[in-house]
Length: 378
Ligand SMILES: Cc1cc2nc3c(=O)[nH]c(=O)nc-3n(C[C@H](O)[C@H](O)[C@H](O)COP(=O)(O)O)c2cc1C
Image 1 (spheres, rainbow, N blue to C red):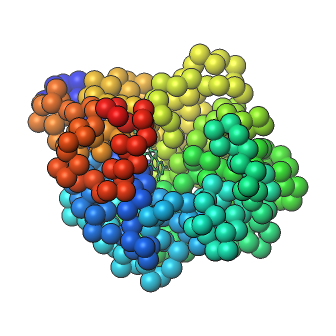
Image 2: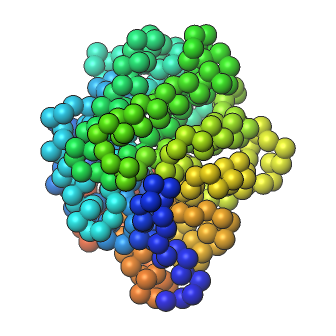
């Protein structure tokens, strides 16, 4: 093995004492392939099994915690006890290959397509439409949730965590990123409330922090201390008003003291720089985050780490763990190749002739090949 790659293959111990066998994790990726009844499909099980042999931990595609949080066609359900056997199948497929299985838990809020939610009713922190591609989608003005409904959704995140525990997962990741409901409460764009859930930066943190508390309460009641709880966030929003890097550092400062087992930033480019809200916009977001976290909790970095040398360089920036997303769709043997000293054989562009070999379902394959520029090679 190339000595430069030693770090990424070395074990890492999470704050709750759980040992990860190496530093590479699979990023959560929606695959649009679940069965119409919301159970995990055979195709999904095969797709995950194919990608769980090298990484230390697999974070699943997000599952929704209430029916009005369904954000994607072919998304699997985590909102009902009847789903425990289905959730369990996925956990087993991952764990059988030697990786920890982490269920990502989610509510889509104003990003949900109306045809996927009961009565087409879209909900969010406030009645502000999302700007998609810079244009407000006027047809989809969400309804602001009542305080009681907010409490119910917080409870639902705990309930899905309880199901994850029953289903045999090693942990859950709270999806507070990518513009979905948890982020909508933190964002000054989507949260214009004047009750205890909004009005100031501090109050906009109420919902995300309450979800952390509820998930941790359920874990304490139903699981052992080895059960992993992580939190994912996006550092900035392009809209004005919108979340700035400065806002995120304040949230991260709070999250770092919450007793979580990891934080996970969502970035398309590991080296991206801060847009606004901090002094130095030439400094990378990762640098700012590491400084603020100050070793209180591990940070998972991510974003266009295609080659082993990209990963070695990223570890030198100071992150203890790295997530790979598209890279593991393109080359499921990424980690094994590094371990065997064959890192120069890592494939970095999707081979459009190899859908079957890559074990990719039709719905995911179609999205990949019809979205130019998203995956290298398309
Ligand atoms: C097909 C696809 C689906 C995704 N779905 C999710 C998701 O369910 N939850 C999430 O937090 N991020 C999701 N992401 C973002 C990835 O986790 C990751 O942050 C992003 O792809 C950048 O990492 P990469 O350059 O290694 O692919 C998705 C990305 C892709 C490509």
